[in-house]
Image 1 (cartoon, rainbow, N blue to C red):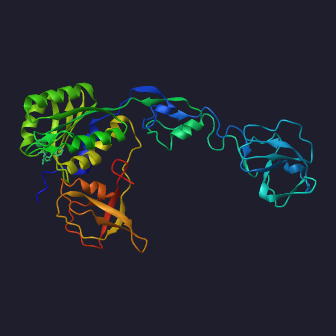
Image 2: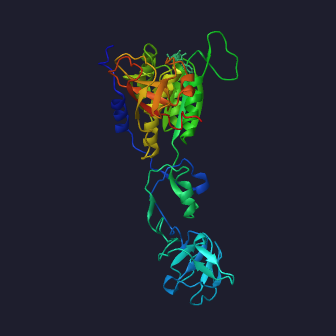
Image 3: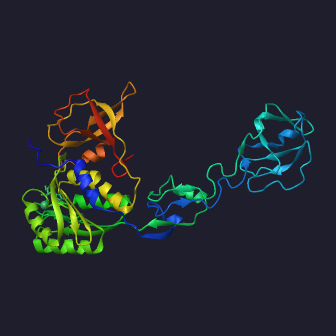
Length: 410
Ligand code: AMP
Ligand code: MG
């Protein structure tokens, strides 16, 4: 296959990244509304975590210098949320529970299992004691004023509870990226309506809309647009007027591209690329008046793969998510042969699992046609086959890329 006129995935990604710059407008949101949002400025801690020295164990707080190896009477109690408040006589200990503030002057906590109570209730320590043991120190996790996250971090289950532990009720995040989408095709029918002769259901809009909302973007769904210049022109104009990014599917393959191109030339500066990737050869990218435009291929597998590999990184950059990346690729052996002809970087769908020897191996999901959408639900990874590679025999090494949250399933 002649691939001389084709753009590699890296070239396409670079061309896109070179043109766009991230959103900067920020807004303040409540912590409870911040899931999926991206920090607009570095977050610093208003408090120390822990906010006070506290016990890591249930046991007894002692003054190490004060301990002579003799059993000690218990002078009082310290619970989580209820500090010890009384006098602390020399030669005594204080009963303390996990999370309770360390009584002033105490410098070690002896865990309960390292003590025994005498018949008169005095506490005998049965193990060696090191000064400072079992005390969680003020600021040991996070110091007041320290940077917790830089700007450009997407907030999820790893980040938001941490911010809650700092007592941050609200924070500054970048405004949400707004993405408009529509699908094109005279053959498309909406879900819920019966299929007429020659019609198929609109898979792509459903797929892209779902992935966009999983990524936390605001979605403007403009429905199905017919293959008609007037309707298409209006759709592009409407979409560009309301969104930061416009995504369409279909109409970029050979033949169709000619007239889409003609029309888009009036509306902006769009480039029609032939990518050296499979599935997903045709792809359009450029600028409409006030919005970026991505034109995805019509075949559903191609639409999803190009969205995933090209548009997802672009949107992350635009949204200000500077830490975004795809899961790292891993080298494993394939347990099944893989059909491949040299020419394009191939994103086949595979199932990675552990074999009887405990090693990771991958199998094909089967038919790799760009209309076989079930390959995504059967699979859990891409098998990424280099452009120049030919057919792959069972037992050969290949690279896989585990699906991220957009395609993964339990
Ligand atoms: P196109 O790129 O418009 O030439 O479409 C390529 C193939 O994908 C054709 O078989 C179309 O019927 C199919 N196709 C296009 N758009 C969609 C869609 N939204 N959902 C499902 N299939 C589609
Ligand atoms: Mg079409």
